[in-house]
Figure 1 (cartoon, rainbow, N blue to C red):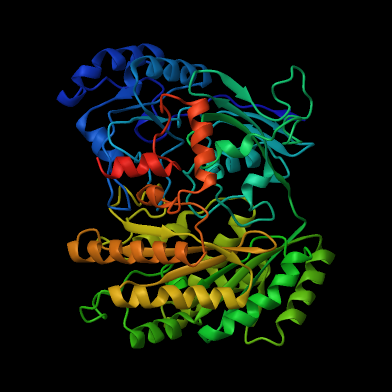
Figure 2: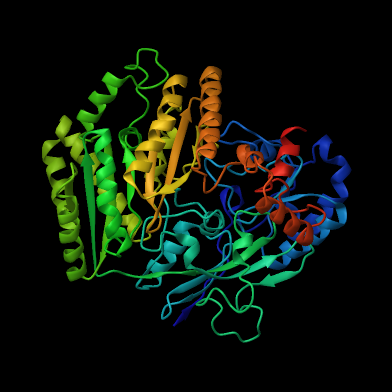
Length: 573
């Protein structure tokens, strides 16, 4: 069975079918007026914008590091991307492609350097194909998590996609090309991609895997094809513009349960991780397991308590203990999903109980019946402290169930608003946009072995830096595969407070440098750290540079993106 869709509405202000009126070019773009006119001939007059409002919006970033684009162009299809690339090459103008521009915490929609022409691909949002028998979709870069989730539901397909907590309006492809991860058994997302269509810097179109063979039958079910496996070089790189990918989907599970573990004392998390590791390695735990500290959990349901903090820039320890007690959380929380048949889930529950019984973890299992009972109890308890706590727990559980069924939920973006003066927007999480909402947030994301000793060692490295700078330490460790943990260390700050911004940036810089020095290398980085990726001028980055020179001798595509030498030149003017 194959299902098809047509192009959906463009994102954000472009949701009209008809293009908006072209804005006047700024004085700084006058010399590029012929280029912009030619681009409007390609994509339509309303889809090349260089007005002040647009450029200011695309310069916003949670990182407080803004770069100024030359203009923003919104192609509507693959052929238009090819034409734009060839035109930019003829004019010697650098292009910076983004899917929907929601790369929160890692650069948002900003280019690495100034003066690049942003190519936003949000109009390219066709779900080209869904094969229900072999469980895969073929999508364009503008397809959002909400769009694919809704499509699978509306078509009555017994398939789930993997989704992340980045919000419903984020691009599936954008996150995959950054090698992001989600929640489900398919949460290590790049492992579940097969077949890419890539526009190279000279306008040539590359089909990876078997895709370049006419009538190939296995393009989207066997990623490697024959010959060198090229797909990886178009992730976390600036070597091409990916305009289409094949994405594997999951058959719906007959049974879904969640487990939640509370660990009261910080030092007791190490044995819990060591107890869970064998279950992840033998396949008992198929979904990605998330391990968050108390502040990471608390930030999902409340804001920085300025009134109670006594003028401190971070939560005082005594207040932190009170907040934990009121919310019913420990020093650490562990969550994960159990999926499969009823018998498989029952066996996984038994194995999990057995593995954790010698640890300090207090474990409970949640199914939908318990959620319904919890919601009923919350109504009975009303506005009491216990009632509010129960409502928060039920909402959290419902969001977890939705996420593991491939239904995106923006509530997990709440942590980005921790120190925002205005708090959560009135309609949060609907169309949440931390960059436009003036949130301050930076992420350091090192990879470490799935060992309790490594978790405690990394925490011990970074915690003194956060304390010295007066910054709250949020951290999550996720079992992205059977052997590795992906850490997300969050630096949240108040963008309206210059001192808080300075503290946060110093904290981030020191944490990033220390993680690199101690061998806990980030799995992805923000634009502000691209220049720091090659401290030893090693052969790996020299090889990447040679590939870039071969595929993009003009340096046309996203100069500086995962290109340390060029990023360093950009930082220094």
